[in-house]
Image (cartoon, rainbow, N blue to C red; front, side, top):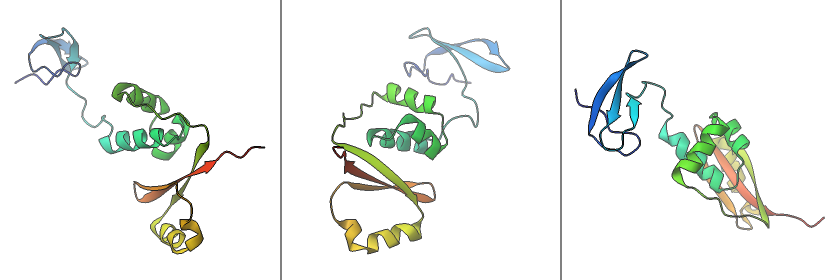
Length: 140
């Protein structure tokens, strides 16, 4: 049995280092990190990681991403930190979004008044679509 790659440094050089919770533990020879074999069925699908990061960049808050994708806002914060994603500073515009099914999306695009003014992105969200639109903050 060859050891799985180290999650910290990606090295393939590891030695067995005991058993914890009935799972084999390894110690990386390169960096000294201890790790176990990945749990089956507990990993988040990369699709949700990518979608969460896209939404974050578009200005959607961590809690809103949690509600939309069904993943913890803490997980989203960890992914943002892990991948070094920085959202651009937004002062004049703020995003609003709607979740639409295919029929609603088609009806939206059939109305010419909905196609005027830039600042609209549509992204797949499972079996639905998310439409993000930017609006200027209005001086009150």
